[in-house]
Image 1 (cartoon, rainbow, N blue to C red):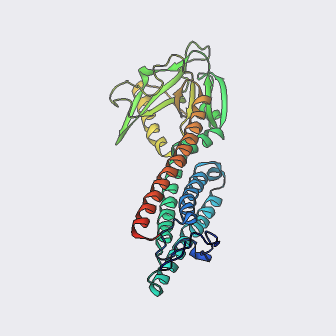
Image 2 (cartoon, rainbow, N blue to C red):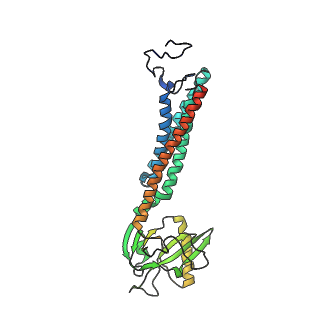
Image 3 (cartoon, rainbow, N blue to C red):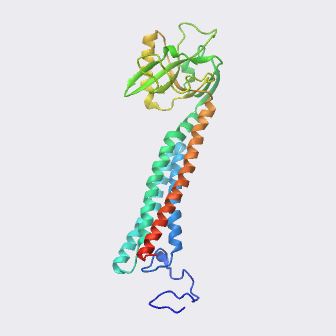
Length: 316
């Protein structure tokens, strides 16, 4: 077919992408043929940027080598955000010299890379804080089995992350207590019944805790696991900011019930400490894969919309 008005010759031997030179692979003015390279780059580059940001903030490198993560974040920002910004700026300057030149894909790439960087940082850090950080913390603490609370002293188990108590251990709900400070911080003694080591003077050092699961005015502890007859395990409380408030609740229990707690340790009452710890890792990994799949479809949607919009504007 002959060319008219500068249109591409369909019957020519010219390579389909021979018109692209250097940065021109994104856009040339008034081209109506789909620029597949620009579409693929705009689809996969922001998505890969999101995947990378989410991964380095979610997984163990964030816990073990946080400084390396901060360096990687800055490098990712320079390459994944600043570089597209420079390309978009250069394309806009070219448009001033050549009104026919259209920098649409460069601007789209810069906008979506910036969005991917920000959303990836938020999602990755949230997943790490809520799930993976708890898992890594607990994994690095010690695990103990068959602990008798009447014989064990809290000071000897300061490194405990997971504890399986002796059979017959349960929550002493009748001596539970709550301390209110915006939230209600609830505590209940963990005691081993029918122990030959039990005495009236035995220090109660192991406490099950929970937030907003008691009234704070009576012994009505109903936090997770309190009614599970098979629960004899505990996961260590890893949120340091809550510990002072639980300590105040223990002090109230000491004064109210005439008991002693020399070295109180705070735990979540669970059936299987190992399974409960691994559940944090499983949920964190699940969240990661759901997030990267969801973001791929979000980016695909944005690319499709942009492609249709640019085609309508004659800027493909």
